[in-house]
Amino acid sequence: MSPTAGEGLVFQFLQPKFWPGFWRTPHRPLMLCSVLAALAGPLLAGTDPQLHARLLIFGFAGAAIGAYLLTVLPGWTKERATPARIGLLTLLWVLGRLMPGPVEALYFIGLSATLAPAILRTGVYSRLWAPLAPALLALATLLPDLPTESIPLMLAALIATVGARALPAFLASATGHSQPADNLALYLAAPLLILGTAVLPHPGWLMLAGLILLCQMLRWPLLAPPLDAMLLPPWLWLITSLLMMTTSAVPPSFALHMLTIGAISGMIHAFLSRIFALRTATALIAQPASLIAAAALHAATFARLMDSVPLALVLWIICWGITLIQLINHCRRPPQIPVFVGSRKNKHTQTKSTRP
Image (cartoon, rainbow, N blue to C red; front, side, top):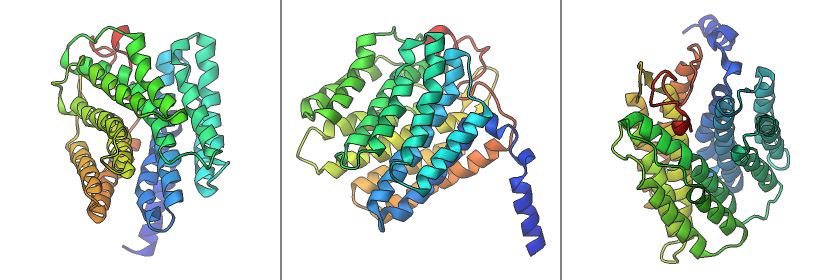
């Protein structure tokens, strides 16, 4: 390729028309940030483990959290973040990567300040956990002496909160089964126990939280199409990692990698795969590339648990490299709403009882 042709390709890549509706949909810029952080994270593992951990927790997971919460906000409140606000949050996320430390808190504070007013104005108080989660992460960025497992446990509590509503809704929609009746005590118990452990460590809390999450899963329709079945392995990794944290039979890093790679990264990828899915009149169908990437990610988890670090790294890069290509292709198409579910006309997908 000639230099002129290369420059022309770069120029075309930077044109707004190459990315239709990019700033109107929060999941596009923030998920792009998340995937790029996932690919950059392993490069720091050998040279700066602390920066590696911050990039993957506050960068990779932080951007994905913002993408999800801002995307579902209109479904809760009928209000959506403006392109200017999405651009500002993306800029704050980038600044946090360039200046790790207190500056990282600005993105999470901005995210919380975007979510809270809309939720309070519309009186959707059952969703107040949404602005609370980034507020806690903002606090965590300012406390460098937190125990190693505390921040991943905060993310585990968030997954338990989101997953307890979203996963049965997605599974019920995909299978045509009714969603289990809401049980507020069951819904809140596991996240509160996990957060309690981060503040006042006790293995009994995590044991109980893991068993509650297992009980929740057993109430769901589990025989689901591949796209929806992809949500289940991260949930199982979450349960297993919490239970592993209660025993001294395995090193702490074993359960921590199970939580961060298998549960947190796996759930982020499973939600991303819904964005890339083929849309029919009544359903979402998994892309083969998404299934290959998911298999690589869960294989990377097993490889890391067996201390096969080079293999785990290769599989991790395969997963997120495939995902980056999918995301770029997705961003070149006009936005489709809703993002994580099929058509709202589908009688199973967006009734009050099955909305995530």
